[in-house]
Amino acid sequence: MSIKQLYGYFFYILYRIWLKIDKAFGATGPFPTKMKALICMFGIEVWLVFSIALYFGYFFNVHPHIAFFSFIGLGPFIILLGIKWFIFEKDDQWKYYVKEFDSWPSQKKRTGAWIVIIMILFIIFNFIYSLYLNPPPGGLRW
Image (cartoon, rainbow, N blue to C red; front, side, top):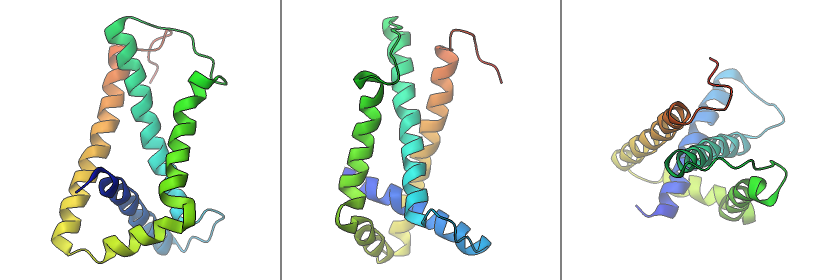
């Protein structure tokens, strides 16, 4: 599985989860299923970016104050949104990914789903651990 396929499968798994939730609850809200999947992807990627920044601060003992509304503050998020647009939204490429992965055999889907789930759990636990290593100035308040 290539990185692009894995990234597309990441979207596909989240899309299928949201599709099941929408069908179960009869959701007809303003956000289509693909948008919910992309928002979840973006959230998980933001946690990855934050954990990388926290690890950088911990290992190199660098704690610069970065204004959120600056290029350095918004740059990674703009890049992530640009990648999402280019890979999924441009020419409705997300439909191609859904059609391609629907045709996969169930064993291959199951293996890919486990890889994606393990990646998501790794990112979440990695983010929590990076907060433990390098807590915010006021400390962690749970």
